[in-house]
Amino acid sequence: MMKARITKVFQVKDPISKVWGQLTTPEEIVTCLPGAKLVEKIDDKNYKGEVLLKFGPIKAEYDGFVTFIEMDQEHYKMVLSGKGSDSKGKGSAEVKMDAHLIEKDGGTEVTITKEVSVIGVLAQFGSLLIDEVTEHVLNEFINNFKDKLKGRTVDNTMNAGSMMGSVMKKKIGGFFGRGDKRNE
Image (cartoon, rainbow, N blue to C red):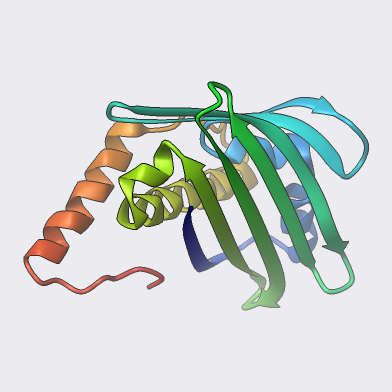
């Protein structure tokens, strides 16, 4: 099993109520997650979904469930978890995402922590790949989320070329002794 945990903090100019509304509406937020789609609403907190990750020769498609574990509007804190199985039976993945919002400088500061555990085919590629994929997907999510807040159309198709470029850049940078600039 391979695990990754990444925290990102970013600011948007939108009021906290608007950001909270987008972040806690599954039909809205799923369009920000690369490769994800909702398949069925089970109830207000549970959903069936699919995620397709494709980068280079690697392709993983997960069918699973997403559950909103916590939605504390008073403190603007949300926790969701997702569990899925590779549609070819070659592994599984779990994700937990915590988000916390605070009003700051006339806008909203968003802190997102994402934890991913992968078993199976993707785990065979090692922790560096899992870390980089997790970070890349979270960065794309954040960019899509910001675009959605601005009223722009969001395309949540996984950008495989961009992901591979990001992974290779990190590997080459590490090879030449550059420090890891994650979470800056």
